Length: 197
Image (cartoon, one colour):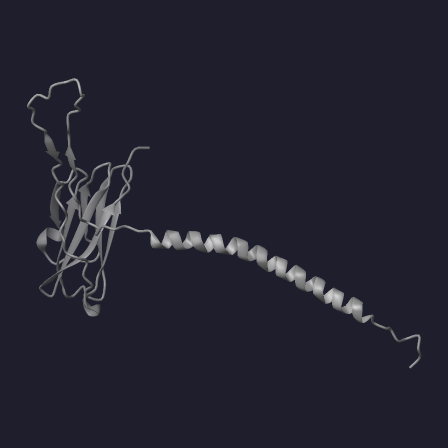
């Protein structure tokens, strides 16, 4: 080989080049860490916050009115009125139950926005031969409830439907399926969809 083709590398330049790359990588990693740590802290706060009450339970609010006294006035014998809010009727405390696999059926709950009608449609399923009865309990927004039975209490067929008039506010619906003589609560949710345009 000739001397012209050889390129000499200065060791000082080689090390300086590597250290510059290392500093740039370290600075880039520090920027990422500065962004990542607050993001993880916020995510941890969001995940750790949550509801502390069991869904479906209402606790009555208790308010107490008192009269203010000034140093110059003579306190008159008064009674302190205590008002207790009357609790709204609570939906059943039964939990949603999972039906055995061979008895499961499909139901679809919807609410029509313009008319506020609540629709519960029976769609059949693997357990339709075991299904004896389907009942829906509708809690209106004022706390009152009404029960409706599909197919006048007879064995429902796929496509059968319960259609009831709901309110413009949110109504709560519970659906019970009697399968092979055992009653299961299969649905408990708010029927949302009414309202004004």
